[in-house]
Amino acid sequence: LASALSMLPMMIRGVPWSPLGIGLNYLLFWVCRFVTPDFAALQAKSMMLESRFQVLHTRLRSIAEPVAFSGGGNAERQIIEPHFDEIERFAEQSIYLETLDSMIKTFFFDGRQLSIGFQRTMSAAFAQRNIATHPASPDVTLSTFLFDKGCLQAPVH
Image 1: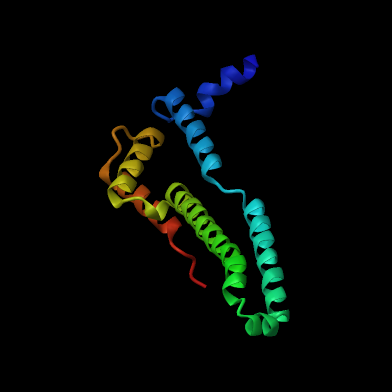
Image 2: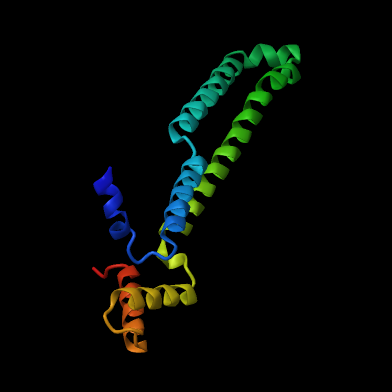
């Protein structure tokens, strides 16, 4: 434990307000875990709802002729439609959760979503902290920025 604590400043070197940075990183991690849906549970519930509806629909198809002759279409409709509406509600909810998860992952993990001004500021901060010339020259800042932008480009095949 003592050696880990002595290495802590080395691990967080270059991060301003390092305890704050570690705390925000930890908070961000828990927010991402909280927002990420349980995809296995979503798929299991979807399969259960669809199988129930399929059983009811198959039953209706097998008794369609007697239902038509007896005029029981409205009664069968009242039995089947709530299950279909539940499938629609669940599909809408799961699409919302998956979209929210995708948006959060894209926002935090895809550097192309950041504004150019923010990227330039981060390049300047990196150049000031990690390159020997203090203060960092505009050439160093620009080369760092262009290097970062070049790394984000898709590879050409």
